[in-house]
Length: 462
Image (cartoon, rainbow, N blue to C red; front, side):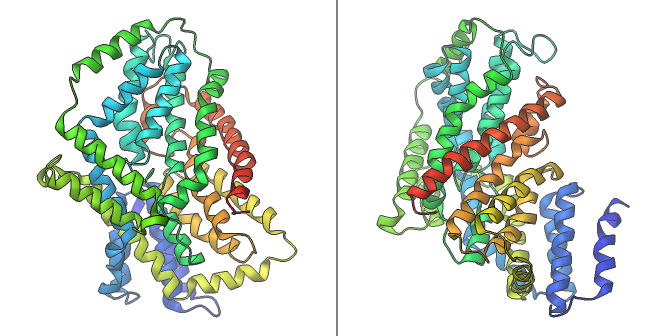
């Protein structure tokens, strides 16, 4: 019955016929696309299942050929995410991610605010190389944050405000900032880059993404622990117990293993290549594939271990399918038809005012979505299309939407995997989470629109 409720709007509009000037196939594909998005938002089925159903319907309705329906699975954007997931598995399985986090905590965690900065630094180091913000925040850091809180005698039921609430809020919001800073910081970020390529014909690659985000991102991370301390002041006085426990945990890891050394060296090599693309010309996916091959041939992680990483293959299905649907809308003429319709309605609206209005709508519409991926798929391309009819630099338009695609997750306790995990630990009450989330959203707007605009002017985006 729930599935039928999702299908009813599409069935009704299907029977109404396509608008004037729009190819019927394009109109029907759009209805299928919207139905898939509704399914993603409601989470009635797993993402991959929803996408596969949509693709099957496209083929059976003769909207797309089977060959066209499978096109997205060969896209380099899809494989960037798959390869990055496989490499991230090596970071987690070898223990490198946990070691990096403990090193940061030992180095900076001398006060409760220092622990906040240690969490931010751990996120910053892991952000470029662990593309699943859920794996990074929920799988690596959230358990450490929970353990630190309990070591400071702060539990969800007893003294949550002593330390646990503060540390969990810092961890959750730091995760979103690092997800925004890198193309490989969140699994759905390449969808934004792909939409930029389709609509603006520009390459918003790893280097470009990081170039635009590095200054506002670092400033945002630097101010976050202080902001959260003001919004949710911890009452703990001494963190010596946590330092003793972290030191014990770190010592229990022993010396660096061969697998950790190889993985860390490979990740560093990949970051250097991603950052120097203007020199050598290797694409983001090519560099990721090179890193994966190095890890495999050095046996830092075996292929048998890697193929067990179901998240990579799940991402292959849902991301490849969504790219097929989005590309189909362009090839069948829906994008151009919608663009002409929008252009006719944009009269006497300044370009910058339009971009700011669209960015704010995009940011705060996250209240109505239960996952960042569905939010991106549903709205990012549409906003690009609307803004494409202005004379603004396309890199500015893409950058604002790309970064806001992750930062907007601060608003709710259900926006993305790590947020759900941090909130689920029970240290922060729902009303407190919403209140602080809204205030953090204001902070993001000030940093990324205010300070960010100065930086974007310096790099030629404005």
